[in-house]
Image (cartoon, rainbow over all chains, first blue to last red; front, top):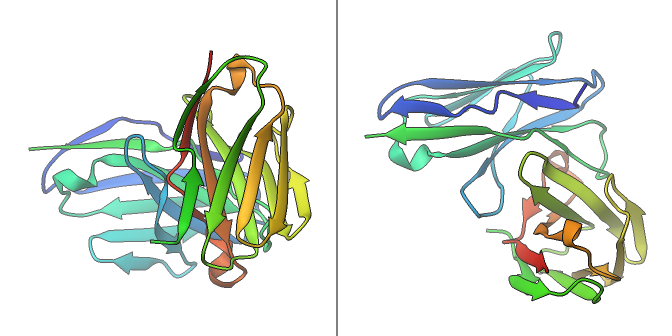
Length: 111
Length: 113
């Protein structure tokens, strides 16, 4: 079983739509969680950290369910510029050793 | 944006030649990482460093070596490049605060012919 699993998509949605991505992780001891965004042929960029209580940043909302080992990202009022690949990322230990990356979910927002 | 640069940004080399990629940071972060990204595999850790002269292997370290003689520089060497090492290589940095979230350099696109 892979450490971090995501639906690869692609998700094709019209502008203004709400879209949700899900991610599951296998290590129940995982300490911290993130969503990264990666544009085509570019480096991954941190979108937001995910906190136990859930957190929101503008149109983006992240949720964590430790019991189900499940992370979600909700994007409201999608923009064309949201088109990218979204990576679910998990730190399995409270250290700087390594992060476990999902393979990403592709989003295409269309006019 | 975090101050991370990678050089070269693009390189084409022949099988069997040595190649060194450089990652340079201006953030004074303790941890540095080298990843490769290939279609169907996502990001895979090659090596990482937790301080000057302190390095360790990641999940795909065979055929690669690293060195970190200064906080700001982390070098990745392919001793004898093979076609299977054709990939995009990303360097990343992190610090203990903020749960070790990582910041990535712009990447190096390496082609081994």
